[in-house]
Image (cartoon, rainbow, N blue to C red; front, side):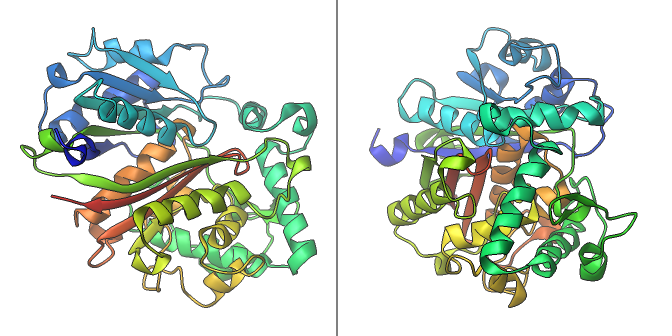
Length: 393
């Protein structure tokens, strides 16, 4: 095969609803998407050479060894090699990249990727502490309100540096909730409006620092799956979404040892991906970005190069990232409206980008979407994944 034929492409997918689901556990969530993704791709379970699953867990379930669950959740995969990958909130992208690596190394021809998390069965009082697995516990373990507390600190630091941008955060929240109305998988399908998101109230209390409830993504259950193969195999299938570029960049773990308002690892990942793809942001039709908190999305505008440092607020204020703007960001509603079942998130983002590129995104669809960017991060921009994706069939 030529190099192009060896390059991995996405040929099918499946996506569960996100929210408080009846699915009992990770096994049930895998079952809800695995077989459907294979059917969507037009391949049989017996054709799959490798499975990569993304699950954070970190205390959400006593059942570890989630790769073993593949053998009981998806008929026909009882003897297929499977691994479980974890990389904090970027776990889903890590699983996808692991599968792509297996394809491009020639070790597999067809791979299945599944990301899932069961979060809502865990008492709310415990969720925050479990999610602190994605923080540097030696220094950040005692921060109140868990990861919301960490991003509350980031928001406070940003405001001290650049001024109070609470209203712009509310505009980001309102944008994503409005976009979420068109997403049939979204946990929260309700248009709250800027005024509600910008007003502290009983229904929208402060959570940590300047962040309000509407600035924080939802605790959700859910799963998503992708089927990946080489280009030669994809020639006989109905769809093919290729990676013009994919990049991973890490930053140092403790917030105390870097500028928490800069997301330098994310900036470098975007720079590397754009250079490899030979593009600028102007070439992208849309971006699905990791808005675990509205503050994250604002800083990510800066990291991707949409604005100068400290001016991310201008992108939302000027309408650039609206669904009808110059660069729509999170036309799916993002994590803010869709929900954030940790292991599923990165897989979900790539599914939604693939749907856009195939023109199969329904009410989320961006017209003539030909090139999409995905940014998924783990922790407070500690591990950063950027994919530049295009339809090739």
